[in-house]
Image (cartoon, rainbow, N blue to C red; front, side):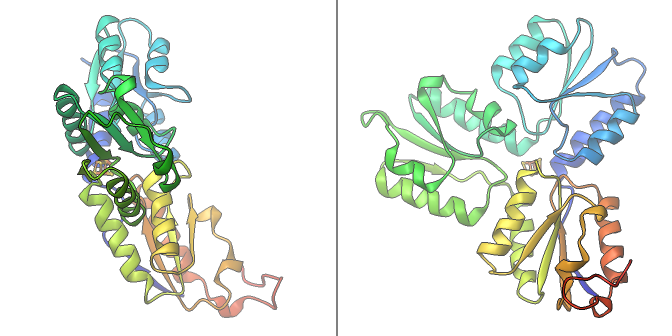
Length: 305
Ligand code: SF4
């Protein structure tokens, strides 16, 4: 099958830096053991498994503040590229843990912005994904009564803000730029006084724009990425809604279903910024070797790849 390898795709600089830090710590005997990561270092189980083989323990399934309770005294803890709230930093310090901070500089920038605006008396509307660690960390920079999460355009009509106080709108770094533009426009219409800070990072923008542009010349786009990867899910969404082409997300080669490629002559492949390259390469090799012509009649798959 004809395969278009969409670029840029895969690891962004924030993810590369976080993984490099974790692997360096694993090799450094002076780093206090055990070494824990607070949440998945990146949202990809293959990357998490690789760290586990190096002896690094990933804590997951609770908020960052709660996860800290599972780190024993004297251990090391790594903050992921998604960033953490000041409450997490303070608790780690109070517990005397050795901290290694892999927060992406682009996330740090949004934390600084929220801190600065809160200090100036602003209320914050944070546009982001509920349950994702990045909003948890960034919104933690503001007192709870001064920050509200906006996750969809339908939220805007029911927002309650203090009309006397200035208002700043800050976004998560890995959102769909098209969806976000619509949400920001709705906020601006309802609150003309709002200051808008679109913090979608360059790596996210470039991957989305490349996927949408490439989708014009293909029949289907495959996005390689973990189910928990926000930016991978947004890649699927922008191909479907902005380019109007079908898109499927796979975690690895095992998720590929030959039936998807019936009648497909050309397929595009991209990957979320947390997807390891070898996983994407295996998907590309499978697709290049696959010939949809070998599929049997509808409903039966004659081809085995
Ligand atoms: S997706 Fe953007 S903000 Fe997140 S780690 Fe990568 S570069 Fe940083």
